[in-house]
Length: 476
Ligand code: PLP
Image 1 (cartoon, protein in one colour):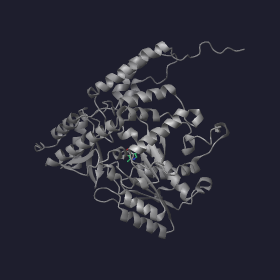
Image 2 (tube, rainbow, N blue to C red; image 1 turned 180 degrees about the vertical axis):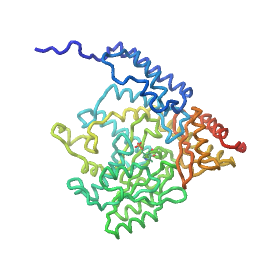
Image 3 (cartoon, helix red, strand yellow; image 1 turned 90 degrees about the horizontal axis):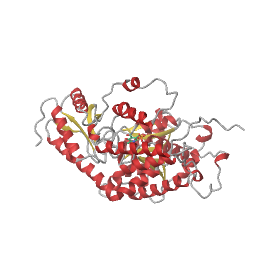
Image 4 (cartoon, rainbow, N blue to C red; image 1 turned 60 degrees about the horizontal axis):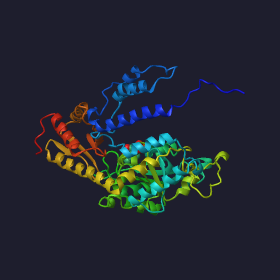
C-alpha cells in the first residue's frame, strides 16, 4: 500500500507556531502603540511593491523569519494605514484590540457556518450577537439578522428579497423588466450595483432629488412613484439612507415609510455608517421610522471598531430571503434542518466565516457604555471642529454634521482646495478625502477610529490652516 510522500508539507510545529505567533502579536502591539510614526498614506508609487517582489513563488519553502522580514520591509511601506488615528478619509474605521483577537481566533478555528451542523457556534453566536446589537440600536425584537461581508452585498440581498415579494416568478423565469426602485441622488453606488446585478436594469433605478441638506425629498419620491405607476411600471422598493456617504445626511425615514406603506413597497434602510449612532439615546430620534423598515444594513466594520469585514443585514421578512435564495443540494441536508437556522439559506454565499466572534468580543469588552463613550467623543469633536472651521473666515462648513463627519472647504477655487488637501495628506500625518457638493470640491473629514484623540483632530486642523493658500485668518 502506498504510504504517501514522506516529503509532504507538514503544518508548522507548535514550537515554530508559538515563536512566530508571539513575534506577530508583539509586532501588532507595537504597531498599534506607535502607529502615529507611520505616514498615513503609503509613500510608494504604483508598481513599487510589484517590482520589489519576485515574479515567481519560491520552489523551496522559506523560514517564517525571512517572510516576516519582507512583511516589515516591503509590505508595510506599501500600506495605507487605515488604523491610523489621523486617518480621516472616506469613513474612518478601526480594528480594535478585541476585534483583532477575535479575528485571529476565527482564522485559527477556520470553521464554516454553511449550516448549523457544519458549526453550531457560527450560527448561534451570530444570532445571539445580532440580537444584542438589535436591542442596543432599538430595532424590533422579532427582526432576523445575518452577517455578510459588505453593505454592498447586503443591499443586493435586500433588493432580491423585495423583488421576491413583488414578483415571485422572477426566481424561476426571470424578471418582467417592469420593477422600479427608488433611492436618493446621494445614495451609495452599491444600491444601483445591486439592481444591476439582479438584472433589474440600471434605468429602472430612480434617483430621487434631495433637499438643501442632501436628504431624500418625500414629495419628489411620491411624484416619481405616481408617474411610474401611470406609465405601467411596477414600483417595488425604496432604499433610504441614514448617514449618506458624502455628507452623512439622514433621509426622513418616517415620511418615506408612510409612502412605502401606502404603495406596498419594500423599505430598505442603509445605515451602513450611521447605524451605530442609533445606540445613543440622544441620537435615536434621527432614526425615527427605521423600525417600520423591511430591512436594514449596518456595518460594524465602519463605526463599531470591528476589523473588516463585518456587515449586518436585518430583516423582518427572512422568509423572503429564503424564498429568493434557498436551494439545498443533497449533501447539505441535515437532521436538524427543521430545528435550526441554516445560514446558507438566507443568501448567495454558501460558506461563511465566523465573523460574529470578533463582534461578540468587542461588544463584551467595551460594553454599551464603552461604545457610547467613544461614539460620543467622535460626535462631540466633529461638532467642535465644525464650529472652529465655521468661525474661521477663510473656510466654510458645507453640510450639517449629524454624526462625526465634517464637510468643509477653503473659500477659494476647487483647485486650491484640492491642493490644500493634497498638501495635508503629503505630510503623512493625516489623511483627508473629498467629495463634490453642489458642483464644488469639498474636503471630507471623518472621525471614527477608536484611538483618535482630541489632539489628532486639532493638530490636523492646524495643518489645514498652515497649508491654506493664503494665511487663514486666526480662528482663535
Ligand atoms: N452604504 C453607505 C452609506 C456607505 O457609505 C458605504 C461605503 O462607504 C456602503 C454602503 C458600502 O459599504 P461596503 O464597503 O461595506 O460595501
